[in-house]
Image (cartoon, rainbow, N blue to C red):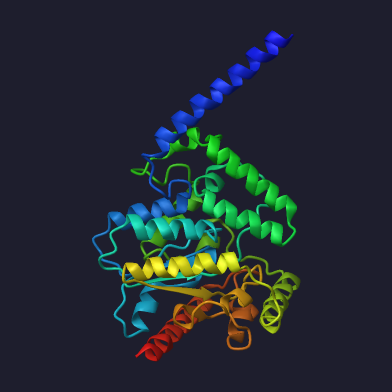
Amino acid sequence: MNIYVKRIFIFILLVLVIQFILGCFIEQSMPYYWGNQGLAVKMEALKNSKKTYDTYFIGSSRVRCHIIPSLFDKNNPEQTTSFNLGVPSTQSPESYYFLEHFLKEENQEHTKYIFIELTNLKEQQEHLLNARNLYHTNWELFSLSFHESLRKKSYISATHTALIYLAKTLKIGMIKPMFSFNKQQPFNGFDKANHQIYQQALKQDGFIANDSILAFKGTLHLPKDIDRIEERNKNDVSYYQTRATADWSTAHLAKINALIQLAKSKNIELIFFLSPRILSNSVALFDQIPNTNKLDVGDPGEFPEFYEVAHLASAGHLNEIGAHLFTKALAEKFVDLKNKQK
């Protein structure tokens, strides 16, 4: 019996070693954004574009559906040419991983500004060994997320974060999606609706309104859950009311400051901004960021229009009218920031 157990153990160990070696070899040839299909589509489009961009917006679906590059460019005197890199669920730490590699690996000769949505570190409530969770995990970001989960006593999230990091280290669950990735055809794997959504977005420098997304998905009018909308509104109000007493992570702030310095070394201004309809309290953390590197465009007291049902596509997103209002407000805040720097 001991002989059979030993053979099974050796076989499993051999499989893990081969998988690890093969995974390391393949990963070296992959672009840093390979696990996020939406970013892969947008990055490949950027690299093949004849247009020269100098300003980028990074973040989640709120960025994708709330910031209209052409409108932003028209409403600020900096003569920007901007591109929206927003993709659903792209929040920290994934957004930090992307930003860091984007700064280090892409030609930043023309880049002047990068705007990144400020969010709390995403909690892993589910242990999912998929490409999206695995590709951006490294020791630094694992440590940041793991200790943040422990600080919040979110032990399920800490456990899942640890399991994902272990899987990434051993290259478990990575080989098949890496083989499947094809940067020449980044749309592979999208269903018809998402294919149309991203094609439309690329025609508008990465932006697409939630109204258009709903149309492509066959839902012309999304039933608005008034109770959920009101709950989200109250949450955002409470985040601002408790900003002076809410806790925040010193490790998270340190990472933010490190990214600001990295961008500065490339002669790029990195600006963190608060969006309306956020899912967690990041206002207290926002207050710790240097004034020269932040914009608040989410305060319900200053921007009540972002909390009106008439400007919403869902509890978490603005509609196209709301996106126009938000983009103009972001541009105005940016102009104010630049004027203060003079």
